[in-house]
Image (cartoon, rainbow, N blue to C red):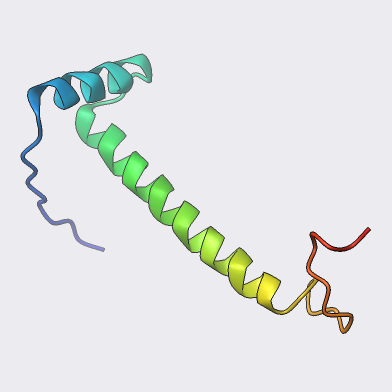
Length: 71
């Protein structure tokens, strides 16, 4: 997998906050932003997978109850 360049224009205050968050973790701003984007992308894909699974009921249970309805 190759790499590409993404250029962003952001507010100075936001960049300062990002720098502080990255520094606390001992990371560069670039690494911090990339990891944040990867984590957010994973969270979205995971939520979509859970939603699709819940449409099937409890792991495909014939009862049709969602995991929230099972006692």
